[in-house]
Length: 100
Image 1 (tube, rainbow, N blue to C red):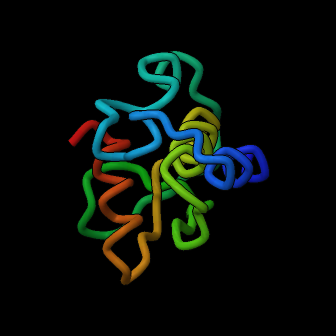
Image 2: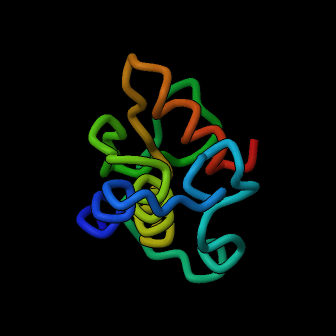
């Protein structure tokens, strides 16, 4: 997918959905909720919900298409803990993916 996205950008093929700001929700939508996996989770003192023990690092996503696909896959496997980078770009993509 990364290579296809790079090729599309190189030849000038763009879609409005390539911009995270133009998306209204994740790629899988409610399907990700229906087919949740069971990544092990645990409790952290002071938090009300279970936290997955596998944390998804968000700093190396090549763009919103790649990020949305990866976030959907991780979430569908049961993950719910994301480590957003200090740079705002991926935090914005994450906010859009969550439906913000």
